[in-house]
Amino acid sequence: MSEIKLENLEKSFDDFVAVEKSDLTIQDNEFFVLLGPSGCGKTTTLRMIAGLELPTSGKILLDNEDVTFLRASQRDIAFVFQLFALYPHMNVKKNLAFPLKMQGFKKSEINKRIEEVSELLRIQHLLNSKVSSLSGGDRQRVALGRAIVRRPKAFLMDEPLGTLDAEFRELMCLELRKLHNDIKATTVYVTHDQLEAMSMGDRIAVMNKGKIIQFGTPKDIYLKPKTKFVGSFIGSPAMNFIPIHHSIEKNQNKIVINGENYDVPQSFGGTNSSINYLGIRPEKMFLTDKKGIPGVVFGSEYLGARKILTIKSEFGDFKVRVSNQVNAQIGSNVKINFEPKSAIVFDGTTDKAIESRYIKLN
Ligand SMILES: Nc1ncnc2c1ncn2[C@@H]1O[C@H](COP(=O)(O)OP(=O)(O)OP(=O)(O)O)[C@@H](O)[C@H]1O
Ligand SMILES: [Mg+2]
Image (tube, rainbow, N blue to C red; front, side, top):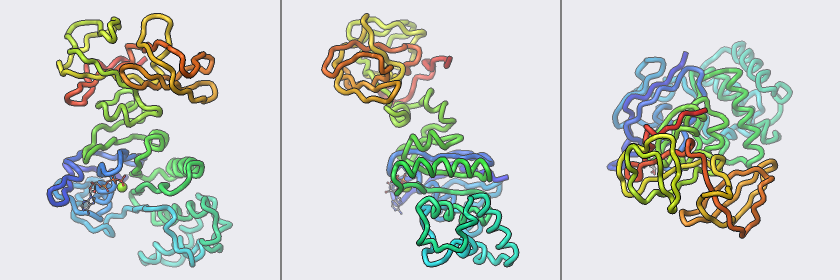
C-alpha cells in the first residue's frame, strides 16, 4: 500500500505563497496528475512530497506515517526528473544497477531485479549497450527502469516528457500509462499540458495560483468544471464563454442574449453579479437557421469527420465543433445556438460555477 496524503500543506517563499493550504489524498496505485499553468505551484508541491522542500505548515503522510520532516532519502519515493537523465558513459546494466548499489543491495539481488525490470520494459537485448548509443525511446525506457528497479513506494514525475517532440511524447505517454497498469505503483505526475493530463490521469488536480481548484476524474472535470478557470483550461478547443450583461433573476426559465429568449431547464439561481458567464463546450454549440447569435465564420479547421469553426460574434470568438458536412464558408454569416442543458453559469465575481445549475449528465 502507498497512499500519499497532504494535509493543509502550505509553502511560502518569504512573503510569497507558492502553495496555499492544500488537502489532497492520492490513493494507492493511482496515477494522479497535478495540472496547471506555469508558476501555479506544481513543482513546489511535488518537491515537498519528495522531501526536497520543507513545507511552511501542514503535513505529508505516506501510508499514514507522518513523513513531513523526513529527508528525501528516508521516504522511499522515486523522483523522476527528466527521463533522459542517465549516465551516458555507462552501459544499460550499470545504469540500472547504480541505484541498487547505492542502497547496498547484494549482487544476486541486483541481478534478479535487473532481469525483472528489463523484461518488463523489453530492454533485455540492450543491457550491454552504452546509453549514448541508444535511440530516444530506448533511453526513456532505461531511465524508467532505473526508477522502478528500486521498487519505491511511489513515483513522482515532474514534466518527464517536457523536452520531447509531439509524436514521441504521445508514444511515451502510452508507454508510461502501460507501465503503470503493469506495476501499479502510486504515481504523481506533473504537467501543464491538459491533453496529457486528460489522457493519462486516473484523477487530476487542477491548480491555479498556488491553489488546488478542483480534483476528480478527467470526465468529471471536463463535464463539471467548478470554476471558469477550470472550464477554460481543460478541453481543446477550450470552452466558449458568453458574457451575460444583465443580472440573472431567480426562478426564471429564460435568459436573454442579444434580444432573443433562450429557454433554460431550471432557474439560474446564484448571485446578481453584474457580469456572469455562460460556459459552453464547442461540441454543444451548433449552427441554426432559426434564432441564434449572429456571427461571421472566421476560420475552419478540418479534423476528418468533424471541423472546428471559429466564429466572430459581438460576444467574442466562439469555437464550434460541427460535422464536416456542415457548409460554412469563411466570411459567411451564420447564426449560432447551443444546448441550454449543457451550459454552465459562472459567477463573474467569484469565478465559480453556480452549483444549482449543474445540469444532469445524460
Ligand atoms: N526557491 C524559490 N524561491 C522563491 N520563489 C520560488 C522558489 N521556487 C518556486 N518559487 C515560486 O513559486 C511559484 C510556484 O513555482 P513552481 O515551480 O512550483 O511552479 P510550477 O507550477 O512548477 O511552474 P512550471 O510549470 O513553470 O514548472 C512560482 O511563482 C515560483 O517563482
Ligand atoms: Mg514546474
